[in-house]
Amino acid sequence: MGKQAQRQLTGNVKEQIEKETSRLRVGIKEAEQRAIRDELTHVFNRRYFIPAIKKEMKIAKRLEEDLSLIIMDIDNFKGINDTYGHPAGDSVLAEVADILREHKRAKDTLVRYGGEEFVIIFPAMDKAAAYKAAERIRIAVNKYIFYWEGESFSVSLSIGGAAFPKDAQNYSDLLQKADKKLLEAKETGKNKTIFV
Image 1 (cartoon, rainbow, N blue to C red):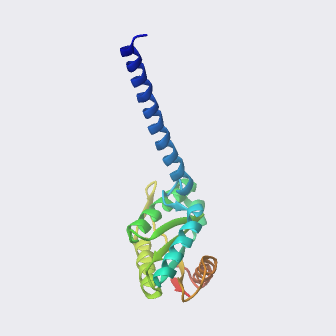
Image 2: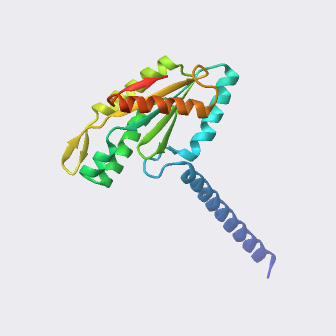
């Protein structure tokens, strides 16, 4: 084999290696995103939540800033599934996630926590501001008209919230206190926001 043929072959092999390496990088990046994103709503999933809240609390502690957290639950979600079917429920979850995405700041972290529950981490936001943000979200969801197979309906959210460092010193206490307030909102009539 001549030198020119060897150079050609070497160039072809290098090109193939670069293409394959690039393809693998893209595949790894996509796999990483699938691991931390909810497939239905495309927001972060529960697996992403713990590292995210720990990181944000460290930053808040270092900068001596507030951090707030809300946990939201779609009221009467089982009724939506029972009335319209699970595909309609999936559609509602995806549309609610879109509304939440529209009403949060770029630096806020939106997570589908499980089932019909969502969480938003509000860095550098005190409890009063977080309550107002939660109410804007609750009202936006409640005003939105959902459509499924010619039927229209609305849904509501119950929301519980808590703030660091005022209400809790670690992420598990913060989440637990917000969750307790969510339960209180559900038990006292739904479609409301209650903070610690």
